[in-house]
Image (cartoon, rainbow, N blue to C red; front, side, top):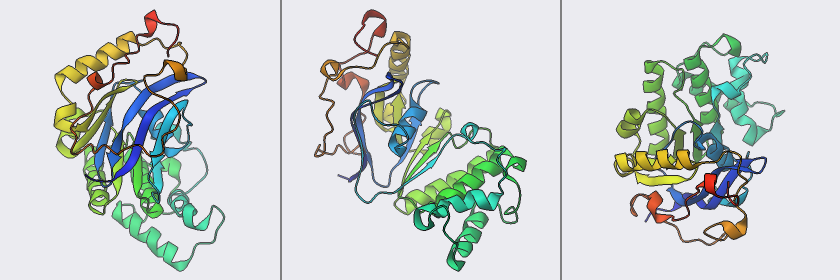
Length: 285
């Protein structure tokens, strides 16, 4: 059984007391490549923010194993590209875990920046303003920043959105190289064909877990139907589940046994009997 990089224990995430992800349980194993899929509004980006520590849980726990550093690439739509910065400034932010935001760059840092710029195909773009970049060029620059961070857990929120086919191909090469180095990668994606071709593991969300495990087992018609059912039953304005209403204790669990998503098979929604039919309940959200 492989060691977990990331463990969800009855995790509930949301905004202003309204839950967007409910009672999520499961493990992401070290060195795995996992796609996070689901319809718009299913909680994918919310989950990524929760893992990154940007969003605190309403209940339960998201636990990153000891010694694991995290790199997070948000959606491009969340970035202010009007900010007067050059590509080298954006990429250099990847050094902040080691140097701090105001730390002086050393000669080895400059050499590392040159290497990652070359790796993503942006050599010569160092002094270009970020507002002049295409979507694909911007995504390459963000990947270069992540490479500089040298993190063990890499979170990518829609990395292939609004980029050309060549850029998708090039970025997939980088992602697979990360995994070959033993890093763990989670990527929010919409293209199920691409997921089936390149991502061995899949986490399927519909505000709650639909499936987690090998992609071929998770992306099945019955899970698609289950996801539609969850969306249809969802009441947007219902409050989040109180601890007493949850199917399991919401208190953080620090010694939960690991469940290997590679070996245990997909964690199907049917294994969790607590279905949130909010239209008929005032207790849940």
